[in-house]
Length: 71
Ligand SMILES: [Zn+2]
Image (cartoon, rainbow, N blue to C red):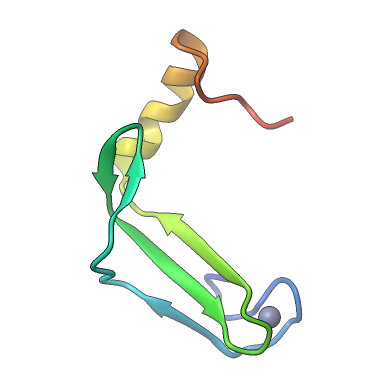
């Protein structure tokens, strides 16, 4: 999706919104993110861009266990 091609329908009609006003909450804290949408089928992806918040997830998975590693 980030390279401009939809993974579902291979369309190149992919748009993103770098400065969304809404907040995504991760573990109770608002984090920065970017939304990508395919205007062919409406496929939608959200990427959290807050590296600090992302780096805490593996630690939480190990110590707290609220996040689980996908297998
Ligand atoms: Zn698509």
